[in-house]
Length: 319
Image 1 (tube, rainbow, N blue to C red):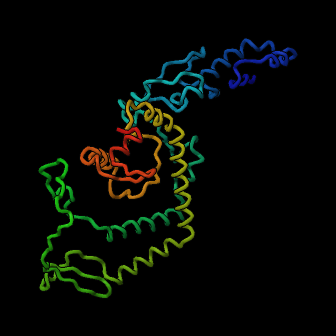
Image 2: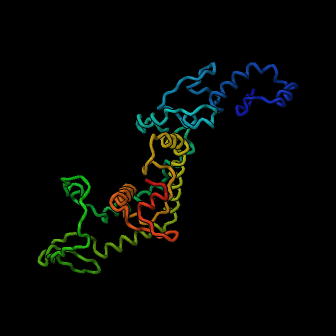
Image 3: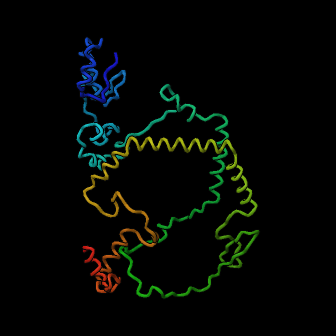
């Protein structure tokens, strides 16, 4: 007995006319309960009813931590008004309790499709061993400081640095005692000419080129390229599935922010150069400071007249 489609709960006149000669008229009473269940489940009810629908087709209240995308999506899609406290839920609950999480098991009947993806074959194990060797090799070339930079310098005054009255003044530094020596194309640095201890020890040229050629052979191997491409596609699809489940909740939380500033604006023209010189906060502070300290400075020639900084802001209705 096939239930009617939940996508058209309101029957039209043509639908009633087509059902007059149907052989399923005697089953309309039983189908009504099934249709009600389908409406409550947004058309996703299977052979067994989900946990939030009882046997009578009545909806059971579910916790916010167990909500999925079909419950948190905007109201226009499911015909219900949007939840105004969704943003509060996101702010108060931890992320791992708010977002719908994916659990792909490498074995089991429900994950046969992923069994061949997650359980590596003997050939894949060999590839993973080679990639792990490359990761171990990388550790020999990554520069690591013994003491973190934020632990070296102690900032006594965390306020804004005082402006430099003479930005173009430079106090030349004296010559240091460091000594440089070239060996087989590698520059070695010593504290002084008599010191034999390298300040920044690095691998010699033979070791470097040997490792480089090994990396190039790994990159050119066809089975390694295939496995890496397959793995990256799998991770991308997992991330896309995460976006399908949780993007509506994140966007709703952004839209529900009670204020607007440089940091939570949702639509930005990113075609801005000189991005390395300052951030939004510094730029806004600089503009306000100039307008307050130098409002009478001539900054533009427009329409045959010279305009000061204050007049430019007044012409744009900015304060």
